[in-house]
Image: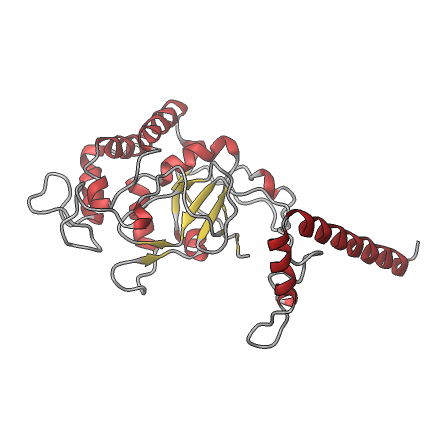
Length: 293
C-alpha cells in the first residue's frame, strides 16, 4: 500500500472515530458535548482556534484526554504556611499547579514519606522562588528537576525504610497544619527522626537546626511560635486556611510531570526522553525531565 493511501485511510479512521466519540458524548454527557462544540469556535487572543493551539493540536481528537496513568505523588507549585506533598492514591489527573512525581509503585510510599519530612521541607524552602509576596514561595518544574535533593530510596536500609513508612502512616490521614505547629507534633518529629537516622545523621544534633531553619522559634525555644514566613503566633487553636484542610493523603488536582532517578513509572515506558540516570549515592537530585502540559 502506498504511503498516501495509508495516510488517507488513517485520516478516515480517526475522522470516523471522532464522530463516534462525539455521538457517545452527546448521548451520555450532553452538557460536556455542548461545551466541546462551544470550544471548537473559540479563539485565543491572537486569533487561533482552540483546537489548533500547541497544547492540543497534536491530538487526534483535540478535546480527548491522552491515555496516561496519573503520577502517584503530587507536589504543589505554591507553598505558604505549611509544607505537604500529596499521595495521589485516588489517581486524580492534574495540570500546572501540581507536579506529578513519576516513580514506580514499589518506591512510591517511601518516596512520599521522605518528601513529607521536615528535612525535605527545608530543601524546598531553599530551592523555591520568593517573588510572590506575603511570604509565599513558588517551586516550578525546573526547580524540582534541577535543584531538589531527595534521599535515594534504594540506598536506604530496608528496616530503616520500614521505620520511615510506619512513622509516615501515623500522620498520613490527619490534617497538616502550619510548619510552626507541625514541628511540635510527636508524629511529625518521629518521621523526621526516622529520616535522619536512615541518612546516618544524629537527630539530636541536626533536628533542632532544621526546625530553626524553618521556624523562628522552634521546639524548646522561648517566645511565641511563628513560622519563617509569618512571624505572628501560630498554634493548634488557629483556624487553618482553606488550603490547610487537606491531608497528606489527598489534595487538589492540577500539575505537570517530574521524573526521578528511580525505576520508571509504568505510564512512562517508552518515553522518548530515555531512561533517567540512577545514582547509587545516598542523596540525589531530580533528573532534568519535566513535561509541561
